[in-house]
Image 1 (tube, rainbow, N blue to C red):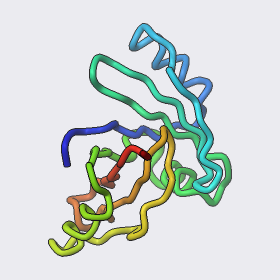
Image 2 (image 1 turned 120 degrees about the horizontal axis):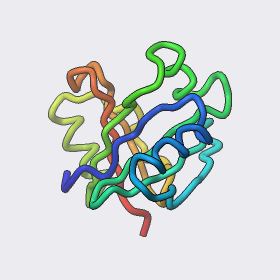
Image 3 (image 1 turned 180 degrees about the horizontal axis):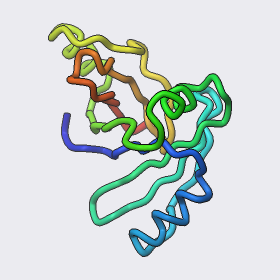
Length: 133
């Protein structure tokens, strides 16, 4: 893991949250994107070298909808940039972490992604991100 790639925040309304974070950072989201396979709409903000991803559910069965129902709005995950996602999945699996999707899938912002189960990471959902080349 090379660096924190972004922090994901689950929100009820992307429109309202975009307005709030635009005021907070003094700049608009640089990108909005829907990931239909995950039932989510996202927007991305830069704050210095840091990236924030806002996530809104697009259907009631999506992971974000379930998170919001259970925990409400707030930090959903921390994503880490990796050079080789498949090698990192194998390494972490060998270290005893539970991988939620052992085959990387296409995520937002031109990334391949995989997630580690929070039960094996002190309650924090960890996302691995590799830029699609």
